Image (cartoon, rainbow, N blue to C red; front, side, top):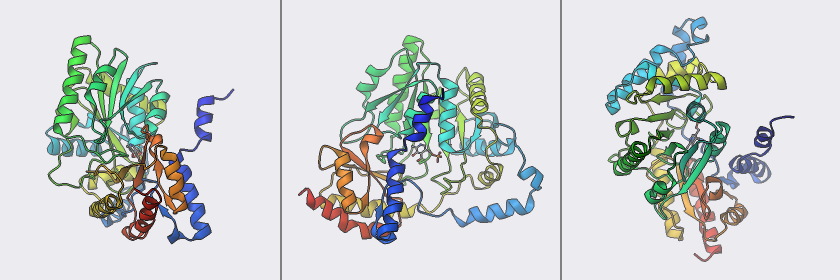
Length: 396
Ligand SMILES: Cc1ncc(COP(=O)(O)O)c(C=O)c1O
């Protein structure tokens, strides 16, 4: 007999993918410019030209046997050292190369981390709305995902709910800021409060709790004054899952890393667990051309000003039409309140206006839809009358 769970996962496409595929079919039927696809988080801004320049330079100047050969399982030492130095300079940490494990993006970083930490039945707390794959990754690591609703209307952490959810079964808390799908950023006071609550609970009960920060959107923040706190500065038992998919517009190349905080007493075991989980899952030796690329472009991003302009234009238009939206501070999503209780029905009705948006149910949060605004500004502009007509159809 096959593994039923995995067969099931393979057969059911995520509804985001489903909608994306529907969009492709619809575009073929009625024309590319008539369908407004806001379904997927694929960066619309190209990778900066420095990416192509660096790839050419690396290919032209590196011995091909080395360039296309295996690196050490956790990634090339010099790449890990460069990244550790960069993180230390930026966030005043004291990481070494041996705190980092290079991966094929945040998805791999998360599965490796969860497999490193969890034993059968351990619980991972996260905050809804959340990236749907968290449940898949946690369950694959034999754990249970506990999704807590956020504070109504702000999508910030509800600390009362967190306090009552902590239990001896809690192994980790998983946060994502800037958030997919709400665009919300957790500020310094929130992270301090979270760290204090976890530390106090661990101390009182002797339960070690790890804080995992999923950070593919760290660089996508639209207010210069807004700081995205680095969790290692607040909490010892912490791991950062980073990716270049969004910041450098390289989602198809699969490159990212896990950084393990070396301030926790059991650091050596946790890092060994990460290496072991990477090995057991077959996630060893991330693509070397892209390891070498991030060694050169560790502090470069694509032109995210386009996303900021999209956010501003979209937010003001949607609120003018009567939609209720929490203004996102980062990432490239808006989480909009559905004008009817059933957000799936709302997303279905939007299709009649050729608008492809995703029901919030998929993110563990009913009554909302996610709209990805990582789209060409011209498409966004063309779609606005459809959003207006959709709002009018509800008389909001
Ligand atoms: C919150 C979140 N975490 C992780 C991922 C996976 O990113 P990657 O492409 O780096 O695997 C995504 C992708 O959209 C995401 O939105």
